[in-house]
Image (cartoon, rainbow, N blue to C red):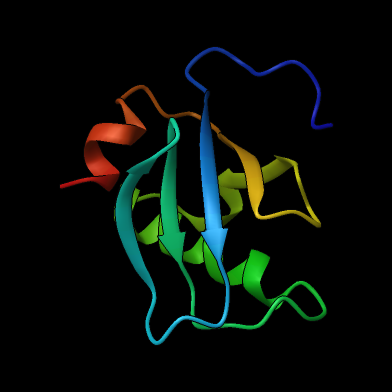
Length: 93
């Protein structure tokens, strides 16, 4: 765990689908943002692709997006550091 989130940080609940035809944010499914990534779940490649997709969509550096729960699962919790906006609204635009 990354520790206690700092002021201006937020968490994001996602469901990632690896080996998709393209990287894309699909929508909300069971209370989580469903995100498809083209990378396979091998050697952390789908996790890296997920953080890249989220960072690009939110307009932040990839280093500010961290997986804090679910490293080996499709259901993950992300921490976005120094981010005050609602990540759900921005991802679904």
